[in-house]
Structures are given as structure tokens and as C-alpha cells.
Image 1 (tube, rainbow over the protein chains, first blue to last red):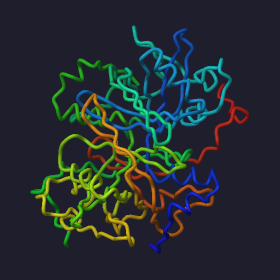
Image 2 (spheres, each protein chain N blue to C red):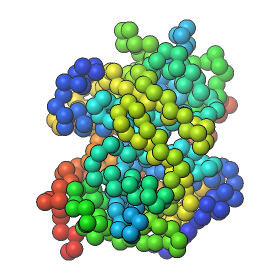
Image 3 (tube, chains in turn orange, red):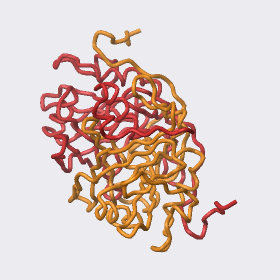
Length: 213
Length: 213
């Protein structure tokens, strides 16, 4: 493949939307995750994120990036107030509804209602799950880390509940994300189905394939 | 789909490997990214990560999670010493080689050599790119954020260089990640090809589809 080289100056001089698309694409393939919250009065909120990352398995910790402004600020206000949220995998059947939770609805409108998704509750847990999702988690807030460089926040949460379709956990503990039909995002708004290629063995030096051939 | 519910106590009582697979699967679909570094003597290191996330487009910032222990610690030591690293998308043609960079090679062995991947340099930039990758970035260290809760670090880096195959940037700035053949990871070691479903429009309330039908 012939090659192209861009420098930081090229990126700085780009049109704002073009740059946003490019830089959001460079981080590669990301999950589409709906974050469900409610305020102290029980008004629900649902917002699409693709910055969720694994932070640790024991304790089971995840993180996500909270931007400084925008509609998704409701998620952060609610998590701060109630201490909890849900993460819900998006599958192709709810892809379009999930995408449109990003629209700037009036403050009094819940994205659950506007986008025809169904809130579901576990007893004693003050955040709504997405009934239609095949893989969901209930999480509690652990730590909010400010990133001084660009005024974002990294929100660290701990898994308290997992709610998923039967048969999605494989014998080794892995989830069958293909069967769950979880979808991937690149850039800001391009969605993809995933097709399993292979489960590789644990990488050991003694098992190294002969790459010289 | 019939449903299953797991609590934090169920997760705590799982076998360690089973839990690691489950919790790593819950974060959903992730990118496979090779991080290239070298020490101050020029000894190269290459390590596979799937915790890269987008932090901001202007300035163009990415983050990744550095675990407290393990072979990947070399990446962090090198980034701390030289101030720079590269991120390189993994495609299916280098999937197996990339996976095996995770093996615990002796300290004096470079994963570039052991896994038959080719280091490539830009003038004046002290970290090796992966020649075989279709989408690569050269980045400089901006901030290291300790996560007190589980002794990990979040490493924030800024894009200085982008190196990619010609024709991969679409008219709107998005990358054609399908043409680049970038692959996805779920859990710790299950790899997937992505197949584009749709590029959705920017989500505006006025464009909301009729979800009631």
C-alpha cells in the first residue's frame, strides 16, 4: 500500500468536522455502549458512549470518558448524584434507536421514551437497564479522575450486577459477543457487525509459531 | 432471550481465569493496537493493547491503560524515558504475530524480532512504527494518571504523526477501517473481522426516525 504521512500541523489545520472524524477513527474499533442513569427524582437518561475501557478484572472495573460539555453531561450529573449507572451493549436490532439517543432532546424528555427503548430495574438499584440489550451491567461509581490537559473526566465504575441472555457465557467465561450481536463503532457514527476469526491460545514463548516460514 | 443475573458475589467467587475472561468480555468490542517503543539505547519493544480510548479531537488525544505488572511494563518504562511511542492498528495479516508479542520473551529479545514484524522510523522520532500496519500514529506522552483503586495507570498521549495507506481517508475525514482490515478483540484473545453495516447521520431531534411504527 502506498503511504501517506500527516503531521500534527496538518491535523491542526483541518476543518473541525473532518478532524473530528479522522481523530475519532484513529483510535480504531470501539464498542457501542448505552449508559443508563436517573436523577434523584427518578427521571431517566440514556446516552451512547464509545469510550468504555477495561481497567481490571478483580475488582471488576471499567472506565469511560466524560466530555466537558454536551447532552451526555446528564449521565455524569446522575451518576454523581445516585452513585450508580448501567452499561448496555448495543446490538443491531437497537442500533438506530441507540444512535439517536445522542440527539439533543429537551431536558424533560427521557431518551428511553424518545427512542422507544424500555427501562428495566433490579430491586434496590437506582439506575435503569435497557430491557432490549442482550448484555448489561449495573455499576457503582468508584472514582472520577480529571484530565487537566483537555478538561475531560475519566469515570471509574465497578460492576455490581451482570444481566445477560442465557447461553451467552461460554465454558471458559468468555461471552459469545457474536451471538449477542454486539456491534462495533468506528469514527463517530459508522457501525459494524463483527465476525469471529479465531480464539488464539494464551501467548507463551514455548508455543511461538514459526513466523520465519 | 431467557435471562441470567450475576451479582458481584458470583463474580468474586469465580475461578480467576474464568472471571478474567468474563470481565474482559463485558467491556465489549475493542481495538487491537500494537504499541511500539524503545529504550534510550534504541532497544525496541512491541506490545499488544486493547484498552486504547479516544480522549479528544483537538488537541488529538488518546489514552490507554497500563497494568501494574507484567511484560507490558517495558512499554511504560520506555515511554517514560523517551516521551514517545507509536500506536499501530493490527490487521488480519499480522494478527497472529501481534498476538504473540504478549508472550514473556527474555528482556534482551525485541518482540519485533521474535514475531517477525518490521520496525520503521520517522526522522527525529524515537519510537518504532510497525511497517506492516496500515494505520499508525506517532504520539508523545502528555500525562500519566494513577488510578488509586487498583494500582493501574492511565497514560495520555497526543498525536504528532499519522502514517497510513493511501486511499484510507474518506472524503469526510473518516478512515476506511474496513479497507484497512483493522481487527477487533473481545475478551483477552478472541479476534474478529468487522463488516460495515451503516454510517448513520449526525443525530438531530428533527431527523428522529418514527420508532413507534
